[in-house]
Length: 304
Length: 304
Image 1: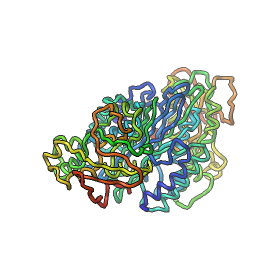
Image 2: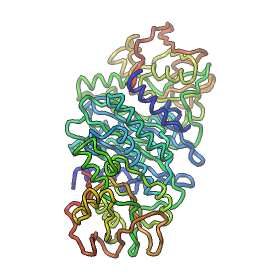
Image 3: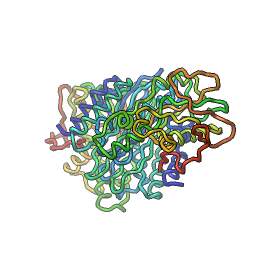
Image 4: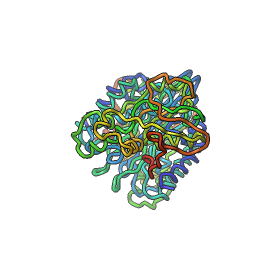
């Protein structure tokens, strides 16, 4: 067990309220009055979750987007957020960060409500947290509800952000749709709101399609079969569509598309790409062009 | 204007929801159904908000306590919190932190609902944030409501934590009530709940009595007269009660007592120490033994 896994085990002892869901989901769901509050918090660390060379406005955008994506996966309406910010010592940098954060918040009607601003000692990597709150008035999908026979979909292609990260790592001045996918993910709030009432299970793709789908399978106690890995035109243009490229795309993180299961025969109410189905049993099966492919050693980004 | 002040000005442009109160309070107050959600978030940075030699269980306790204290100042009942934690690389340290955090959360019936755990690059100072949510079903006091004629009170003596910090800085193994006051502040939740319906204004003392009282005066558009600085027996025993000691105690932060204003003639519903009154006009007047004392250059801890 990794240090982080052991630490999470300790935290679960404190998270004994039903709203915490045993810390097994990306969010907490808290009944409040007639509706439910959806709570989520994500931290981004310099050099770990973003490149020190990434433009500050994109880092600000992304911090908002990853939290909004967690709300999207619950079909929740953004209510407000709190920012924990570590000043950079460079005012133009901080200003650009706030501009990008504000752009993402405005775009998705998420007011900033408060937070805390601190200085870090010189030489420290900085980190930023955003805690976001949403409201769900209808059903709140979890990752535990996938049923044998369900069809699996994603709201868009996978792997763009992973290639974008490689391109931005090699050249901080790189641009184009793949780098944009990595730096400016678009939370699928409208799609999530339409899907929440009909999806048997839903989650956002943050760590990679294979690992996230596998987690949905474990949480739901079902087997997952993926028979299609959707690639974007932009990705195919740069890397082609070989089996190796498809597997790499399915292992890449930071996509922030929604992965969801619908009962067989239910048409997705949003533009969506079918990628497989849910079956009896357990485990993940990957098929490419109809052939079963051995799973890679690592399915995606494992925390810790 | 400091870098932090300029940064807060930028953030205020994003905080255009009435719940954010223009980021002028420690908390956001969000109407939700029949009650109000109180939201607050505090970050503690190694070497800035705590000593690297402080015991990890006390750092965990304090992170919970400072957030709970913000809820106390609103008379709110704790509902839940989210933790942003940076792993230390030392499992025993992390375990002790969680134990102290858990002790404070359990004591005040605050469930942990979620959050995020990250690793920092080697050599970085670490930081921890807690975002706390409370519910207020009655009136929510602000710092803007103090009226000329009101009497000012605190729920306990001031300055203990400041001396405790000096003692712990000189000797990490120091112990006793003053070090305890610095490392294990007690959020005044019960007092806050009883005071909220009657106080014209209330806030917790985090940066020092003089600066916090002065902020209440500015926010309320009134003058503040402080004519008594309450010292604990433990503090007097170590430092005496000279005018210099009293001023130092009134400038010291981290007390987490509640400062509140009551209309003249209203008896405090909790144990409280009268420290002065509210008057027409503006500014802060400090009297010790009946004589007006020139204000020190710095009234307390100024962020940034």
